Image (cartoon, rainbow, N blue to C red):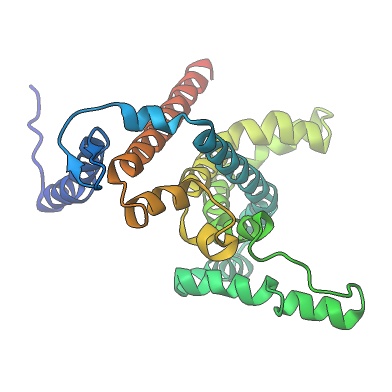
Length: 281
């Protein structure tokens, strides 16, 4: 006999919240992306695909590739930096682990905008880094880091690094150390043990951590705007400028729609890859 599914108040509230604040706005954005504009800038309720066709203009393709390159390199760096941190936390115990987790999340106790301006005070022309280098005599003039791709890159790395560490830490915490010891007993080196034993067992945590940072980086607006300046245009800046500066809502909605489609396909591929790995296991 099949059990009837009964939605509790909390579940019902979550579904209503998801519908009102996620599904309906997404459908509205999708609907606006098919509208057109008059020469005076007014919305014309006539269905068209011209906004999507415009997205494939080489100018916007270059912005997409630039954004993908920045997000990809920042994600890779987060993995390279975050994995040793997650490994250290997973191998630690007691107060040392608690202290490491507290230090990892201390920046999130402050406002996001304040954290970004903290990067400005650190790498600006009159920031702490340049002042130390100037006083030490290593440089004769300030390094131009702010308002460059390097500044945006550092801002992404600083703000998104914990989102990589946590899933990898969780996967390493569940890892059976007996497998590592068995690999050593069979003559495997440290590199072989990591590649053939550790990494295959924690790949889900690595992949989830990568998606946690790569997906929001593609649509990030605040960090490129504050640390990149007007010269650095990325996908998030482009979308926001179409909505609030150019007042071209249909084109901005089309960019958002294509970005959402790309992210959904990425998640579907990740789920398919995960299921394939489970079947082969």
